[in-house]
Amino acid sequence: MRALGAGRPVPPLSTRLTELAVVGDALGSAAAAVEERERERERTIEREALLGSIFDAAGLQVGIAELLEDDFRYVVANHGAAALFGRSESGVEGLQASELGLGRDEILSWLELCRRCIDAGEPITAEYGISPAGAPTSWHLATFTPLPPDPSGARRVAFTAIDITERRRGEEQRRLLIHELNHRVKNTLATVQSIALQTLRGATSMPEARDALTERLIALARAHDVLTSESWEGAELHDIVAGAIGPHAGRDRFRVHGPPVRLSPSLSLSLALALHELATNAAKYGALSTDAGSVEITWQLAHAGGAPRLRLRWVERGGPPVSPPLRQGFGSRLIQRSLSTETGGSATIDYAPEGVVCTMEAPIGGSGAAEARPAA
Image 1: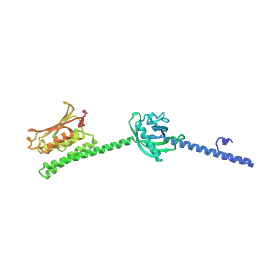
Image 2: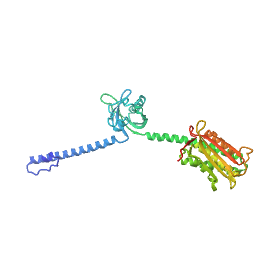
Image 3: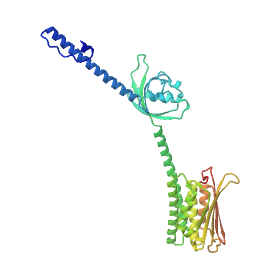
Image 4: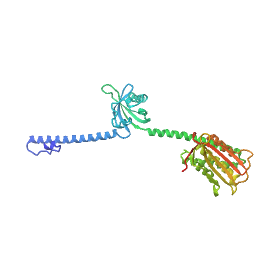
């Protein structure tokens, strides 16, 4: 009896008395039944603890909602569901959605999903967004499962949901990037087409056209490389200048000076092409065609007369005497057109006898043409 009361196994009694033997067997069976029930209770506690940990898993919203005429009430809700309303400690059980700060449109949208699953008689999965009490909208992927009505006839729906706000933001970002990529590809193709047409139109031979077109496309590619390294968010003016003059920069032919300025993608491409045309022309006919020639490239930020503007000067010295061309070439047209069309800027070229001087200006800020950066 002591062993049975303590929950220990009761060994069979060895006796010649039939009655005592029967009693001993009964006590042994009872002890075994008690032991099995104890093991089952421990398994039940373990299962409930495991289910509870899953029920309150981080990021998972689980509960049961009772549908009202134009609202719904949380009958059961885990910490994840309560956390949406900033009530992780006090919970939301027994509260209506309107009491928790959900707007009427959000409530009606949620009710529509619940009624759809009830009408279908099976679970449905859908996405929805909520913004309790004016908080930023969060998006959720939920499964709604119809439950039998309660004794009063109220309809109830079980739900499980996970937060997919970051996924939605990522999808929106990808859509924006694809749109931006399409825009840039179209602009680049239009630039290439213009360069090709104008190069072929002004060339006197196919070899000349081939060489000029190749050099211009390489200049465009260098600017693209700089922008790609910066995720097409812009480029430093020093980098654009270095890329344009790199093929001609032997023997310290260039003097470059100016404050740090970050350019927009459009202004980066326009200046890269303009500087390439100036450097190519200087190498053929100007300061870079002689050993004594040099080029000074300087820029500054001007603030007079409204919005700040970037002002860049290209000055050649030491080359052959310069005289104005009889007709405007494609290089000059490219410099002026790209700055005025793409950035709202301007470019003037002065064919002074001592050397070509090109002055380019473009707005800073507003349309994002350029951004001033403080010196390091």
